[in-house]
Length: 198
Length: 150
Image (cartoon, rainbow over all chains, first blue to last red):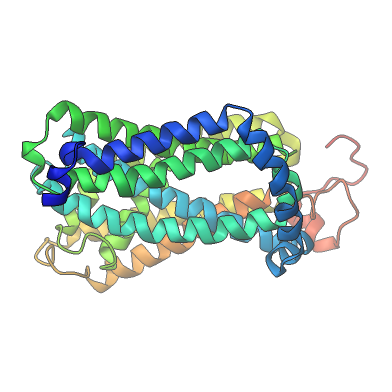
C-alpha cells in the first residue's frame, strides 16, 4: 500500500497501468503493427493443427462438438458469476448480503469456469487453427477475452478489494456495467466465430 | 448465458460447491427471476432458429433428443421446486441441501449439460434424412420415404 501511495500514479497505480496497457493493445490492434505480428503467427497456427489436440479435433467431429459444448457451459457459468457480482454492485439483488461476500464467492466460480473456458478453447483452436487464423472475429474475441481477464484481475478485483462503501458509487456502477459488457462481448464474438467460419 | 449461468449457480449452491455461506433459498429465490428472463429469451431465439430450417430441424435426431431432454428437465425443475417449497428452510445455512434437493440439482446439471451437447450436435448432418440411414435412425428421425425436400 505504501509503495502505491508513494507512486506518482497514487492509489490507482495498477488501474492506470492496465488502462494504459489496454490502450496499447488497441493501438497495436488497429495499426500496421498488427499485420507484421499476424503474418509471423501463421506458422504457430499451422503447428497447432499438428498437435494431438489439433489431430483429435480435426479427426473426430463428435469430440470437438462435446468439448465445444463444455466450452459453452463454462461460458454460461462465467456469465452467471459475472451477472451475480455485477447485479450486487448495481444494487439489483442480494442487498442484504455483504457485497464483499457475494463478490468473493462469485469470483471463485468465475476462476474455475475461466480455467475450463481456456482449456476447452485451446483444444478447439488447435482443431480449427488454419481456419480461425483468417477470421477477424476470432482476433476480436481474443482481444475481448484478454481485455476481460485483465479487467477482472487488474482493475475490478484490486479496486473492490477494500471497503466498497468508500468508493464513489458512479465508479462502482461503471465497473459493473463495463464488466457485463465485456463478457457479453466475449460470448457474442465467440458465437460469431461459428457463423463466420461456415 | 443468463439462464444457464443462474441455473448452474443455484444447482451448485444446493450441492455445496458455490456460495456455501449464502442461504440456499436466498440464492434460489433471487436468481429465479433473471433465470426465467434468460429462459424466455432462449425460447424466443430457439423458436426463431428452429423456424429458419424447420424441416431439417424437425427431422434432426439431435433436435428430437434435445426436446426429450428439455421435457425431462422441465419435470425435474417442477419436482425440485416442489421439494424446495416442502423443505422448511431449516437447512438453509447448511453447506449442502437435503438429499432430495441435491439429487434434483445433480439431475438438473446433467440434463442441461446433455441439452447443450445435443443442441450443439444439431449442426452435424451425420443422421440427416438426406443421406442413407439405418432403419432405426430413419424411424427416430421421422424420415419420409421418397422425400425430396429437406
